[in-house]
Length: 308
Image (cartoon, rainbow, N blue to C red; front, side, top):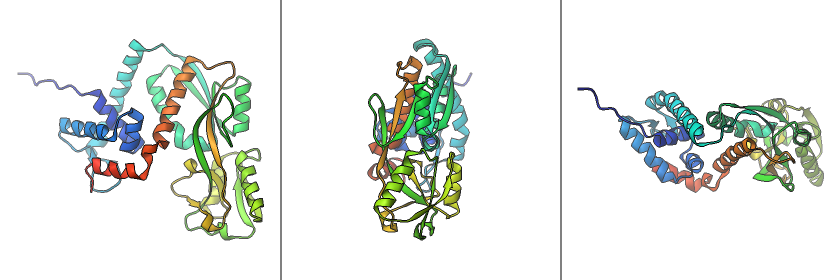
């Protein structure tokens, strides 16, 4: 007698993949518009279905087990096929090119998951990503060279959409000494970067002498001076790498103003595919920076995963 076929609930796989890709039950719940308890229950049902543990619960870090690692690429493939079929049968047929401009410091922490999920949903839309400084991106948008642009500005202009109000902070090497030097060694991005003007105004108000160490149009050059502990730099809090340190007022540095990460569309109007991409961007920012990311939610997440 042939073995009885078993069906896998795609919703369970989607919860599993969302948790792995976001690194958090909290963020996965926000992304899927579910409660943390619902996501945890879906993970439990998937583990019961396969009879294996998909996550290593021996420590506080959220890591997949060997069985989870084996499942992940197949789960992602099934979701890609599921979403492609769903899009084919139920959604408009989008294809063509979408030109997206994003500031250097916003790209790395935020865009990879957006691009990945958008490509999975709309494989016939070719996204061209242009990275630069805000002033250049907005000029390109005005000239019709971009369909969507993100910006980092002190405020949110009319017709722009606020995605995140993000603190501007001083950043340096862990245990570094650069911030103690006189004059203060500072690295900046492009001379046209708005962070530079804000940082210099704060230093002037605090009567703190400074000297330039690096001025570059790419963030990697600035980071190199931070890792070497030869300078500090102003950065958005959301863009600070995990292996660098945020410096506080107690370190003798003046407070910096917050900046707004905004989304803009070409003044002629937004296309349907641009609006679809914008929905993915909104979802990612809501998931990454939503209220559920607070410490209290993180503590609840540990309990729901069955950890001590």
